[in-house]
Amino acid sequence: MSDCLFCKISRGEIPAGKVYEDDEVIAFHDINPAAPVHMLLIPRQHIASLADAQDEHQALLGKMLLLAPRLAREQGLGDGFRTVINTGRGGGQEVFHLHLHIIGGSTIPPMVRHH
Ligand code: AMP
Ligand code: ZN
Image (cartoon, rainbow, N blue to C red; front, side, top):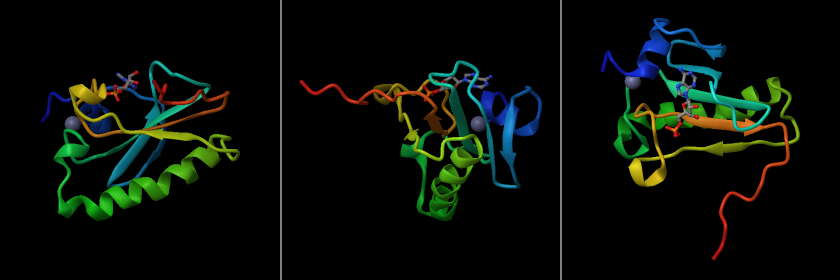
């Protein structure tokens, strides 16, 4: 998936405001932040969405979830943050490379309007 936007960011072909990277994952600032802090944490491996993740990705997904609070703390979100994974068109996903949103730094509204 060489023409994937987030694969290009992972390879350094498109600039991004990186906040963390290792051999498996990379985190960077969302280009259109929904709050004062809005990071995206992605696997370097191209997985199109959470619905495309397999058993073999279990450790990678666990790593991402465990990394989120650390990155949030480092960005000043010691008081809390929101994590979001949009999955598929029905879930509002726009970039089809799995990513975990880490959002915070202002009053976070209720995520779901009940009706
Ligand atoms: P989603 O709707 O969950 O697929 O979210 C995609 C996110 O990627 C949106 O919040 C966009 O603002 C963000 N985004 C799109 N292009 C870039 C980019 N080049 N660098 C950083 N974030 C991006
Ligand atoms: Zn990709």
